[in-house]
Structures are given as C-alpha cells and as structure tokens.
Length: 509
Ligand SMILES: NC(=O)C1=CN([C@@H]2O[C@H](COP(=O)(O)OP(=O)(O)OC[C@H]3O[C@@H](n4cnc5c(N)ncnc54)[C@H](OP(=O)(O)O)[C@@H]3O)[C@@H](O)[C@H]2O)[C@@H](O)CC1
Ligand SMILES: [K+]
Image 1: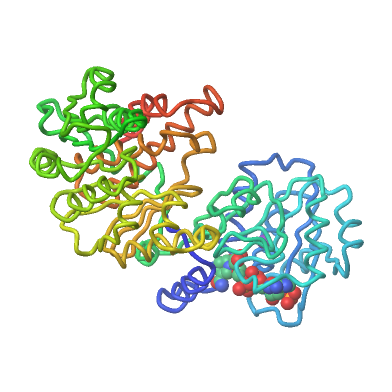
Image 2 (image 1 turned 90 degrees about the vertical axis):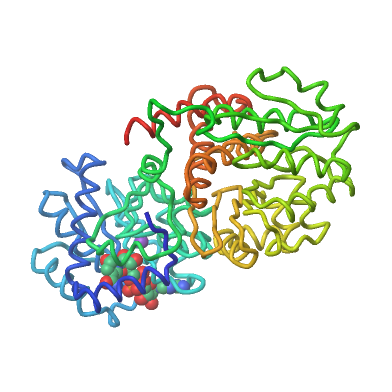
C-alpha cells in the first residue's frame, strides 16, 4: 500500500483527473459516500445526531457529500462551516447546494464559542475542516476551533487527515484534531504513520476512491502490509533440505558481550535457517559453546575480540555462507574495526552489518560504494547519526527520506530502526513498517532482527522485500508478546515467537 506526502497526494489527484479522466465530482462523491459506509460499519448510527464541520477546500467538499449520505440514513445532521467560503471550488459548491436543497441546516461558525454551542448534545463530529491542503502553521482562529474539538466528548471522525496535522511529516501545526477515526481518502499519507501524527488519527481506515492501481503502484514509498508479508514469506516444499534453507554465518560477540552473538543466532534459528555457524574468539567461545545446540561454534582466534589476525580464517569460512551477520557485540577496538573493514571490502556476498560494525564504518571512514559485499545496514537513530554526521532530531523529523537518501548515495539497503522502521534500497524504494511496539526497545532486540534478516535474505531473492519481511516479522512477534505478556518480554522470547508469525503468513498464501 503506497504512502504519500501531501504534495504527492495532490499530484496523484491531478493525474487521476487529467490523465485518467476521472472527474473531481466523481472523486469527491466517492470519498464522501465511502466515508459514510465506513462510519456505518464502525459506529451504530441509529437515533444519532452529527455535526459536519466543513472548511472552504475540497476536504469540506467531502464533508458536504458525507452529510447527504448521513441524512439519507436518518441521522440528525447539521453542517457547520468556517473559512473563506467565497473561494470554494465549483465541485464543493455543487455538493453544498445539494445539501441545502435537502434542507440540511447550515450554520456559519464565527468563533470557538459558537462551535462549542453547536457541538453540545451532538453524538458525532465529522471533521472536514482542513485535509491535505494545510499550508504552513494554522492561524489563531483555526487553532481555537481545534482546541474546542479536542475538548468535545463525542466521537470525532476526521476526513482524510485530522485537521491541523501535516500529511507530509506527521507534525501538528501546532495543534491538530485528536480523532477517534480517520478515513484516509484513496491512500495513506505519511502523517498517518509518522510520530506524533499516528497518535492523533485514532483508527485509520483507507477509503478506496477508485484511483487506478497502475498509477498508484509507481510511488516508491509503501507500507509493508500483512498482504505483502503473505506474498513474500518463503514457502517450503516437502523435498527441501537444510542446504537449501541457507547457511548463515555470524561474526559477533566479544568478551563481556557474548549474549549479542547468541541472540543473533537465535533470531536466525527461529526464522528457519538451514544451518548456523557462529564465529567468535576463543574466550567468547568458552561461554557460548553448547548454549544453543543447533548452532556450530568456531573460535577464529585467541583473545577477547576480533583482530586482523583472523581475517583470512574469517574470509575462508565466509565462502560457505549464504548470508553473513557482522557486528553484534563485537566491540569498538581499533583492531576489531580493521577486521570489519577487511571483511566488508573483500567479501563479495551479502552482509547484514549491525551495531559495532556500523561504528567501524563511521570511524574507519569505509567507503561503502567501494565494498564488494552487498550490504544491508541496520542502524538505530543513534548509529545512523554516527554514520551520517546528522543530528538525531533532524533524522527523526525526516526518517523516511533520510533512509532513502543514504541508501541511494551509498548503494546499500538501510533498515533505519525506530518508530516507524524504514527499509530503503539503492533504487530509492522504501517500505515503512507498522508492526512492533515500545516493548521492543530493549537490549538484544536488534541482534535478533539481524538474524531474521539474514535468513529471509538467504531464502528469498529480493533484498528489499526480504529485509522488509524480516522487519515485519520481528515487529509482529513483539505485538503478539505485548498482547500475551505485556512490556517486559525478552529478546529471546521475540526470537522464539517468530515461527508463529511465519506460520500466520504462510497459512494465508
Ligand atoms: N482534489 C481532489 O480531487 C480530491 C480531494 N479530496 C479532498 O480534498 C482535500 C484537499 O483539498 P484542498 O487541496 O482543497 O485543501 P483542504 O485540505 O480542503 O484545505 C484547504 C483550506 O484549509 C484552510 N487552511 C489551510 N492551511 C491553513 C492554515 N495554515 N491556517 C488556517 N487555515 C488553513 C484554508 O481555508 P480558509 O480558512 O483559508 O478558508 C484552505 O482553503 C483532501 O484532503 C481530500 O479530503 C478528496 O476528496 C479526493 C479528491
Ligand atoms: K480533516
């Protein structure tokens, strides 16, 4: 499912009207009627009263149409208006006139007091004040109206996007309607899934208003949905064997951080790896050997952390693997960072570079476009800030575009972890993930993810989809655990829940 900025949404409307000759009247009629169908499915409308607050733009136009369908369902409906109604477009005017001819009452709202009076005793408010046409910061008049809406106790349904919320970056300008439901017209906008916008949308439901999919599928940023997971998840036939399901090589852990290597191995194990080899140093091997029976452990060199001494042995072993995980808990010693640099520049397979490997890339100024390996980088915002030299807040404000830019510039796949996690590839395509929860912000969760990504990349053949699927599964495991146990579930449990998620997606294929 595509995810658009407000500008892209505007551009898509324009294309649909001009190239595909679907008229504005048709789009607005469909938007308003679908909205009421969705409302009817979610709320009992019997004996209910509703106010539809319409602005002067096309969002208000959707509101007039919705008011008509509500009236047809015998809802006691009033239309409230605010804004420069004289600049209303022809299509909105047309639907306004129909509502007038149906004797739906109209009230112009001059100030917040009048809005408060009108909302008194109304069960439902349809917010059609401002949609994706929001420009810059709200004026005082609109801010006060939105504050009244946010004190209102009835059910609030925003058409397209809560008024005051930016569809592009999910920021409030500086306030926005706090909706119970948001009915997104045609497509999701970034503001519906980015923080803090996502907290103000309530339940977001997309109304299909008939955009031709050939036009929409061209947009490069998409949500990785359950449907994508079902289509992408690898399916095994009966004659499979462990060699076919991917031999995963993990180079992880150092003295004191042994657990990271085991968690990456658990991620790979429960995601369904064919074989797993865990490569560590002698001192680490003493504590990890035998901890996971299915994992083969090899000590590449003596000591507490990897150094250049074991590069040749590491590269020789790497020839056996389908994908490699590099970096979880390896530490940030200069010698370890040189070990990372040699692997990245000399190995020509697929590497999932995580945690300390990302620090090595930044500290050793490794030129990623010169690396032979096909790289998947999995930074959280702190690591991404280290890689790019950018401020964390700046990255958070623009996490989708930042991930895409970095992936394109460095010819890598990036998994920018956080809320929401963004998986971007070198061609400028990206998936935004909507599974996962705050319980996953705990030690070891990222190590598990690296293992899952390695397996999905070993079992399917499209890096962007494989990686996005792994991110989806990881988050979904967290969602299952949150429901069953609550916050406090562990990274090990996250790994152990992955088979259930995989089964859910496989069964629906
Ligand atoms: N085009 C189509 O075919 C389709 C479009 N569709 C629908 O149209 C919507 C987009 O419509 P749009 O572009 O007309 O803008 P829209 O969101 O109604 O807001 C404009 C008004 O908001 C106000 N306003 C803005 N900024 C402000 C500020 N800072 N401070 C204060 N006020 C501010 C300003 O009003 P004013 O107060 O100046 O009168 C301005 O006129 C879209 O979300 C979807 O619902 C769908 O039906 C599908 C088909
Ligand atoms: K709205």
